Every structure is written in structure tokens, then in C-alpha cells.
Length: 396
Image (tube, one colour):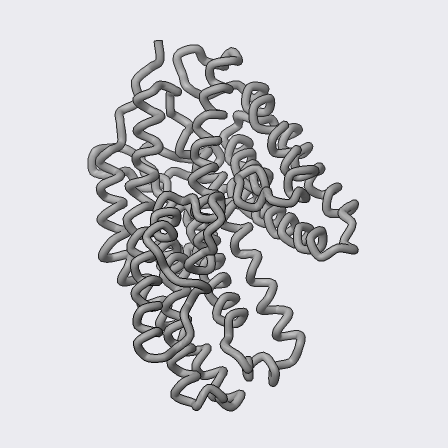
């Protein structure tokens, strides 16, 4: 997912107070509320995966009240929060981008530099944990055996497309994220080039241009693609949630009129009301769409009330937001190692109390691993990506 923090040079919301200027006189917008949401979502996903992948015989689950179990399962909605946040942040990032070959290459290049090193490192950690588990006679963190072809497919964000099982929970979203970047920059360019812009020498597309390019695909995703078999590996399955985040920024930026945004929200509400939940797939989608809609409205409310820089500006949450990408990548192999080793120490049949203590220990272990990955890999990659930022040049 889009890594944090959400800090971009020369950025501010027209409806939000500007952050303090940097040393060179430029303004840095840090959306503390967005970073806080990202941190909460990442932590929720960690907790859900620890609980969901508890080793057999799942003693903690067996001795836990069903209400607690259902509450933990709701944490899986953290992915939808991250999808909406990603759409919001990318729409903000593109606001001054001209659609030229150089700008497109710069945008994609910065995304790759920002995401790939930590992702590849996490792939190496998963494979290393699998080798360690084999040596210590512990269960592997993934099904099947690692191979060069399987690792290469993961490194190219193609594992689900070419039919390889994932090496770790959550890695599939990185494939969707990379596809979204291509869709976002291409759609932005089409809206910019095919429709008259409000200001001819500015890159901002018109409201009708953005709606004409993005809305049909988003609605098709909501009403059709998400229910099709085999669309899970493709961004078409999730583009509606990205679009919710993008339209939120465009409305706060006053590119989209409030009436258009109200129509987008109304479509989401109507889908929630009319969604047939008799099948598990539809029931799951209704929950996902509800989480995405709630996230969208929360971000919009914070921006509309000029609180994007204020709400959730609590240092522990901001810390989680800062390391959320690294935490998201590294938590699964670390949690697996902690729980598998803990189960073996208890003779593979821990008591309910022992099981809960082991699962609880996996949380700080994941946080420490995420912090280390952030310091050693993600932060240097972010600085490298920032140096690649091109100065916007007016299009001819």
C-alpha cells in the first residue's frame, strides 16, 4: 500500500490550514489524520492475521467468546481503509503532474524506488524464515516450496496473475497497488489531454474530464467486476475503493463540485442497501464497501472541518503510520515464526492461556521488525525517491 507518511512538498488543502514551511520556504502538507488511519489499519491487519493464522489446534480461539472472535475478524477491513487512503494520496500527489513521457517515468520510477526495496527484502525474509522453519522442524509459513520462478513472480508483482501462491499474507495487495499507479497516471493524462482544462497552463483536469475517465470504470467495478470470478488479481476488482479516495481529494481540492461527490456517496449507499447478502461473496463485499465508505466520509469530514492536520495527531498513531508499510510487509513471517516456535515449546498443544500469551507476544515482535525494516530499508528508499522528484514543467 501507499507508504507513509503523507508528506508532500508544496501541498495544502484549500480547506485546511497549511503546515509549517520548510527551510526553503515551501510548504509541507502532513495529513496527520490520514497517517493515523494508515497506522490503525496496519495494526488491525496484523492483529487479524495473528488471530486468523493461529496454529492448530487453535486453543486461543476455542476458549474465546464468539463475540471477541467476530470483533477480531472485523479487523480484516483494514485493507479497504488502505485502498481508500491510497486513492486519496495518489490523487493529491498527481495534482501538479503534467502527462508527459518524462513525468510518467518519473512518477512510476519514484513509486518503484519507494516500494520495491522493502518489498523485496520482505520476500527474502519470508524465504529465510521458511528455511529456518525447515531446519528447526517447524511448519512453513507458506504452502509449497520456494523456487526461483516463484520468487521472481513475486518480485515482479505478478504472482497472482501467473498463478503462483502467495509467499505471505498481504503481498497480493502490492500487485493491485502497482496496477493502480498505472491506471491513475494514465487516467489523469487522458482527462488532462482529452478535455479542456479550467486553466490552460495548469495541469489540473476539469471535473468533467476526471468523471468521464474514472467514474465509468469505478461504477463497473462496484456493480460488475467485483462479482466476477477471476478478477481478484486485477485492479478492476478494487478500483471503486481507490476512486472513493480520489474523489474525496478532488472534492476537498474543489476540483469536483460537492454535488458530484454526493452522487458518488449515494451510489455507494444504495449498493449497500440493495446488496444481496445471501452468498458469502456478497456479504463480504458489503462489509468491504461499508468500511471503504466510512473511511471516505471520515477523511472528507476531517478535510471539510479543516482537521486533516489535527485529528489522530497522536504520536503512537503517527509512529504506526510512519512504519505502516514496513509493518504490513514484515509482520506475517515474524508472527509465523513466533507462534510456530511458541507452539513447539508447548509440545504443539498449548493451554488457552499459553496460546494467548504467544499470540500477544507476536504483536510487539512484529512492531519491532517493522521498525527495523523502516529504518534500514524503507526510510533510505524514501529519501532516494524524494531526490528523483522532477520540477514540474508546463506542457506544450
